[in-house]
Length: 423
Image (cartoon, rainbow, N blue to C red; front, side, top):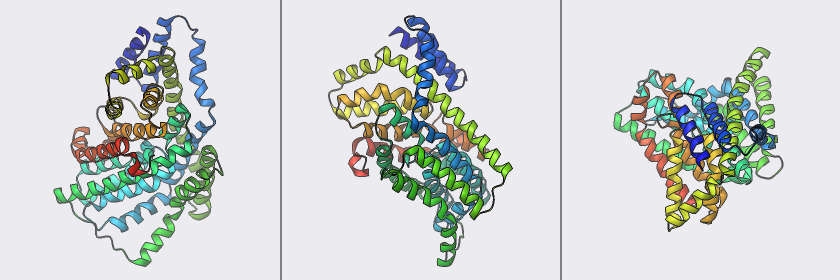
């Protein structure tokens, strides 16, 4: 096990030194294999490339491209306008608008980073202009953008399904209830903080005619999660990859035929941006899989499962230990590598306590999502603070109510999964 310990140490040390996550992972893996000595380095290349041969992985770049196509056009502004008219007149309406917009786009992007960037660039400056604090705007954006990984389609859910062998559709279906619960609690959090801080309301007039017009223009965004995901995927008409491709075709058609706001130069720029974002995710998948392979051949997952089942007497205690491991990991590691590294480690443990693999997947996704806006390496935290031109410390202070609400979601998913339809 000295090889695993050394690989982990190298990985953490490089990560703390500021080395990009993917390169820190592969460096630790190379050192571990070198010390092991019994396996050729060629095996490292094979194990890195192997996960990309999974057909479902093709869905990731296509979902990212779909989000980029719709975020950058008129449709994004229409969805925000509709959300503003629905909840803008309530106390905390600006934050609620951010939450509802993330709910709408969560069924498109599958990525919290994409949502935090695309929606944050529009909503956070507007929040500051109206009179809300910059810390509040950044905090709401950082926390609500994780709806993109909880409400399907979700890239982390695809990764978990690939790593565990469960059905993507089953994990997607289980994510609907927790996603709705998370959205509802975030809406409450926006209202609570706004009342406590005395933030102003938006005088957004809502008439039946205006609502129907806004809804009509925002419908193309709503159709994707409702029709393509809920109907086409869950009924087995198409695979998750085929659904992702259909979503891209649909997004292009909407931009060209309905909104007339997509030309060749814009399309090229969108494709380039999406390719760059996809490359980052896929590189993490490759190198994380290599390290997970090293852990597996050294039987680290089995050792951990045996240790925990011997020392923790109840199923509840084991689940609590899993949650704590995920919370700690999420603070330092992004969701993609965390899921790929921890799934083979935690799956034997879940099996030992007779936990459904889909239940484990939802615990992993909802818990690791908190790490996306938790110091010291929270991705959506840094993105939102940067857009809002506010310090990470101030944003973190404003996030405390949202941390508590997210923790409540984790408790429900982990210990009362039947309440939200996970099992």
